[in-house]
Image 1 (cartoon, rainbow, N blue to C red):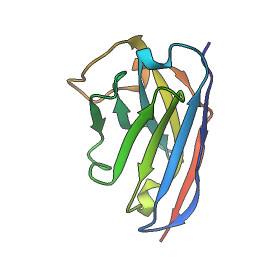
Image 2 (image 1 turned 45 degrees about the horizontal axis):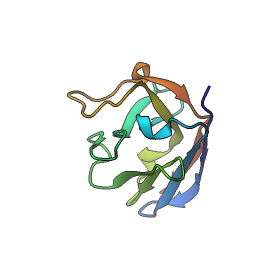
Image 3 (image 1 turned 45 degrees about the vertical axis):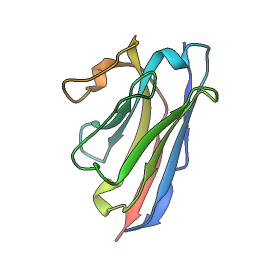
Image 4 (image 1 turned 30 degrees about the horizontal axis):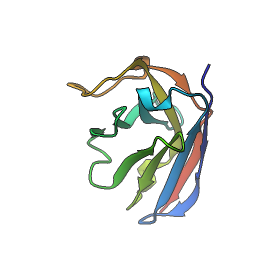
Length: 129
């Protein structure tokens, strides 16, 4: 079972930036797409961004498009989420996740939580106004 460990969360003022990292264990990291989700208090977990196994395609929720960038380094078994121009509504626990199916090259819809089989423990991001 793969282990995913997020880091990089914290408290930042509106307009600021944070970079989240997610380190994965195992030898098959490069075979799977990786995603970021977030969950605010009292709300459902929502999709933020996903990057395909090769890094060739990225997809974003409309709410973060143009502000967040997902990337990966397969040599380091790590996926990143660069978050710029942060807003108070970005406040949430951010989770990284590994897709259940290997070698997915594209998405015709926004990924759902059930498309991912392994999850990290989450890292808190708080954006003050």
